[in-house]
Amino acid sequence: MHLNHTFKRNLKDVSLTALDKTPDIVYFIDDNYCLQGYNPAWRHFARKNHGESVLDKFPLGTSIMAAFADQARGFYWQAYWQSLHQHKKWEQDYECSSSEDYRVYHQTATPLKNNQGLMITNRLVKKAPIKCEPHEPDKCYFNEHGSIIQCCHCRKVRNHSSEEQKWDWVPILVEKPHPDTDYTFCPRCYTIYYPKKIKTPVKPVQ
Image 1 (tube, rainbow, N blue to C red):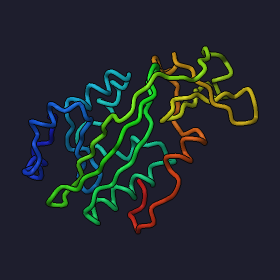
Image 2 (cartoon, rainbow, N blue to C red):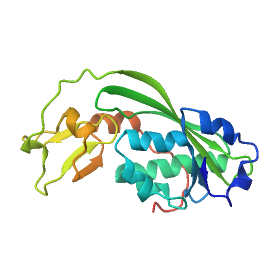
Image 3 (tube, rainbow, N blue to C red):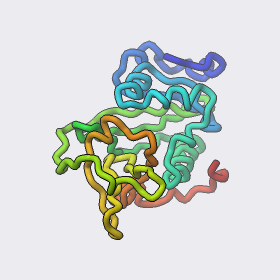
Image 4 (cartoon, rainbow, N blue to C red):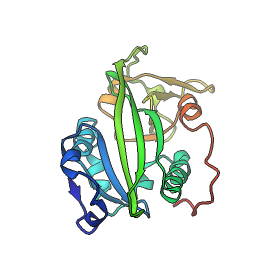
């Protein structure tokens, strides 16, 4: 477990040994949503899914809000606020597919007993081969700024050849992401995973 030792006192009721062994991706945030620790599975997932830069961008003490796409930042802020201040679990299923597999994870935000933060657990609950029609990289996937727009969940890429919103499955851009990739949500995933806002008074989104 990679952990901020000053935060360890909040984890007296948590088995860190078990978290070191679990395949579930687990991390801890404090009541300001700053990363305070993560298990080996978190690091393994980042490296296996070409997210090595995440390990550098989000050292311990960094706010995890910056990791969420703009459209979802307020949603997760409110969800974690509700879990922390009402002292109850918050759960969500979400897609995070790879270049070969359709994957669904179950996220659970569990308040720590002293209410000083949350334990966020992400468990793989569904995995199946991708059945989308594959496309090869093409200039139609680059916008006027030379960037690729990719959905955070289904990993499809925006096709700019038409004024209508079209998103294609380009597996090579999932396996080897283009350096100029902007992450957002396709209309389908946004509707599925962010159907409504949580109506709870919250601090301004940072």
